[in-house]
Length: 409
Length: 207
Image 1 (cartoon, rainbow over the protein chains, first blue to last red):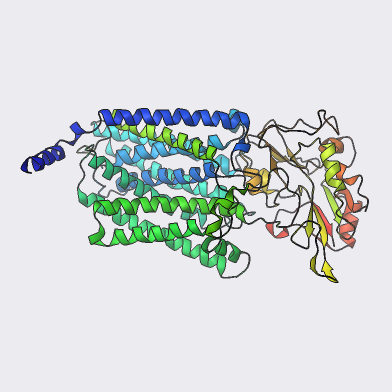
Image 2: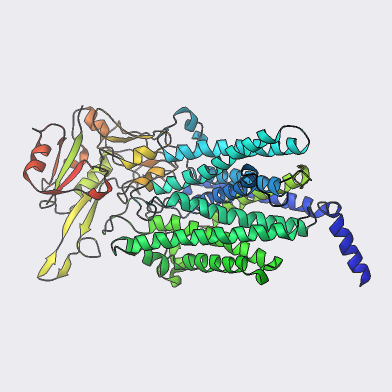
């Protein structure tokens, strides 16, 4: 008994020695294998046709773009939480900023990856630079996303330099300010890809920009919490519980803001009792009800955990954070599928090409058929892209000096 | 400078699909694709009326690309593969440039106008049909009605104009007040599809 306590103490004092080793190497190998499998599936998708996905002419985006939205959010949230305290000269969260930035770099790469696997002609990507139509929100997103990725890397590099005693605090603060603005911008621009389209009633709202930023903060902070608690458990870093509590409270605030925005949007759609009422019905009782209620209830539970001191135990914090991440993913599904669910010209006619798949009927029991549900191939390619992210994250943890130091923020 | 447009008389259209078929022939469309389609406004099924006999009502609306004056699709294309031709006002599509991101399909409010070739285009016949100068259809790019751009270039009218047994379709320059189309919309009452979207479509429906 006493021996056990002694070893526990020892491991808490010298956590670095415990982390890594065999487990980490196995993780890296598994992630690499999943990535390679995903690549093979992507090649199959390109050679035998995207007809193997369940995207069709009337639901022309699917799981890939859902994941793209979701991951841009995860990455923006991570960077905001690491840079904001430094910019405003506040106390940080106990030196986790480098890990937060690294997770956000991984997520940005994944977001770009999801756009690439969604393209019909990825070999023509160079045209984006040769024939850029600067009026297209998609082009804005490509520019901002690329800038954001480079800035995040510069920010991480500057942080490491500063902690190594080189570089000035002022320049680091300047870089973090630019990175912060860029993080907010990157998510607003992603929102505009959808929000500027007058043809899809569900997307066409000025609220979408700020709402995407609040959703980004929710899932970004939740991801950092999960990663940090897991890394502390694995002995990679030490972190005072007060920093965790601080982040959980922040998560609670962000979740409430996000739910508030949702409430505003639902009210504005429903109140005139026009076509917007169909969208509210689709979300609350229709085909997307499952995703709607998981988000609303999940986020509400997260808020309760965050604001009730007694409930702020580590396992519950992780549960709350995971609920928030799942909730925001459900939000993304609602947005993407919801945009295609209600056609503008809903009259019987022959449809050009495959209009829809009947895969949406898979969730029919939960309130009507969705116009879209991913195929196995799409899940496979998604896993492959996620595998690439896991690979980057683990390799970064193994080789990059991301552990908190005395000068860390 | 012209702005070509179409005026379709819904009081004349009998929903025979001759326009759809001639379009498909002329542009050598892959098996799955229809650039011009006939929508039934009435019952829940194609060719069914609303109401109970004898109080029934039904009309047909033929829908292809609306060649909007303020197109939602061209604005969002990141590489300019879909663009408005300044000479004719036709919204064109460059298959060689299209990266297959399908942003235009999300932006276009007119359901079912744009189609993406989800696989290698397949044809029932083992030889091409229609105009020899239509661009070759490609896998994984977006396509749609071009107002038969190849025919406009030769001074001809789009293929859907031919064969219409009810003579319901009219084609011409909307910028020319003397043209048949301009005269028709000056004299008759008309509707435009989803006018509230602000896309200013170049297709008018006489009612």
